[in-house]
Image (tube, rainbow, N blue to C red; front, side, top):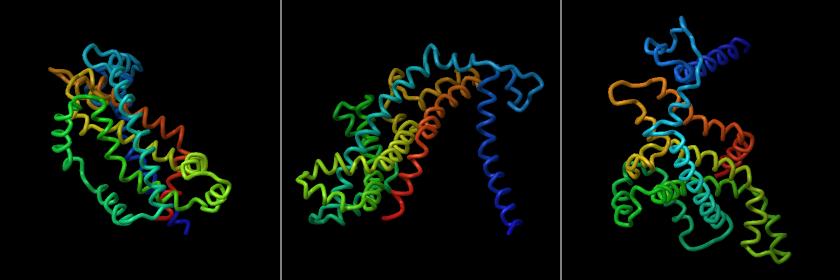
Length: 275
């Protein structure tokens, strides 16, 4: 048994190391001058630590990461709040109320989760062009919100089934309306699930490149993932700048997960136990 446990630990650490090495390489390249990394970030004969690369990409004259961060926040925050609010109402309705074609409608929502981005982008592009939403943050927010609704509804429906219905029935006997029960009892009890969804949805929107690439064309509207390729330079690639921008881009999802990981794990467990 000890040998088996040892083998499992060795394999796990080997996989973790394999996943960590690329990050170490990017980080090492981000804190060293360009001249020291052109021969490989693992070359440490001369090792100079500097934060100039981060400042250079943050204040870049044509594609500053500071502007990209602001744009990403302006898109990611509403794209997280809107679908969670709408999906919470829908999921609660699927769990606590009976209406015609309820199961068929829920099955349709689940099937919508399987639609790839590439399949919907053409009609979305044409629709947003007609509505004047192309190349606007609002158009991308609406798309992310719509694309996140199916899986959020599924997740919250599973979580709501784990909540004790007796608490809601007691509140209803005391005269509380359905909306009062939902906002004052169900949502506070669902805080771990809501935080878990917020982490997942925020990170998904923050890391999105495909939708932003198609729907945003003005440099002043670019998000973080669009800005990084612009920093590569016209005649040669500044790997130190690219690495620094990549570290900045991934720092936000890592920070969000680090701050909320306790609630995230509780919500994921509650949202997947029952289905």
